Length: 305
Image 1 (cartoon, rainbow, N blue to C red):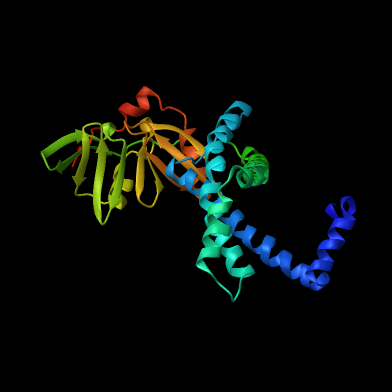
Image 2 (image 1 turned 180 degrees about the vertical axis):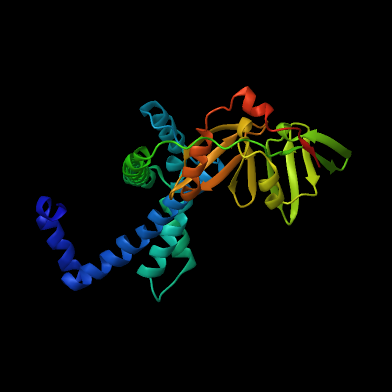
């Protein structure tokens, strides 16, 4: 495009460079390679912004997306002050090889580039690149999630007719007893508590804990033990190191790379990253119908551990 608009100027630059090959080499050293570092640093800053502010999911609505992209604006506007020294250093090393001079480097490539003219020369391209990369990532995640939903619907449509062909089997009698209380301890002492008060059970460095509103308590039972002893209607092993209470599940949302974030109704809104393969079972568990009072009474007395 620039050649068609300014052909004589471009040809003059080629002649001054000594030919097309020399002109290409100059463009490579002065423009393309240094600006690769600009692009890399800009994308890294945007990525680190998500990590620092724990941005893992966004509501699929235009106002939410608008607010999200507005939060990125300061990062893009200030990115110049991070990438410019690096870009200019790379440009100096490529252009001046092997005749390096610190005075030339400092005055020409560093001090003289921190100007309003240089800043605004970068501003529009950086804005375009930053928001283009952000929206491309959002669109890619949206398409992936939509494809996953369609695959689940197709799978459900394939399985459902087969299930309907056979009459429903009567529910087995509920005679199993489940653990109703546990004992735990922390730095302040011991506590006997009902399992219904537990937000979730987890394991850290081979120690097993129950998370309650009163705090975290060390327990003697492993997650494998708890998985078999707790009522499966109320508790679900959402991943290898977590068992969650149905009452504590607040919501869930798609995150990235096929993974989901499950949020619990704890004081700190605890979040658990769950793989896609486990989410289908988790959703089916959440959709389980409430048992009748008579069924609850038939479970017998609770076991104390």
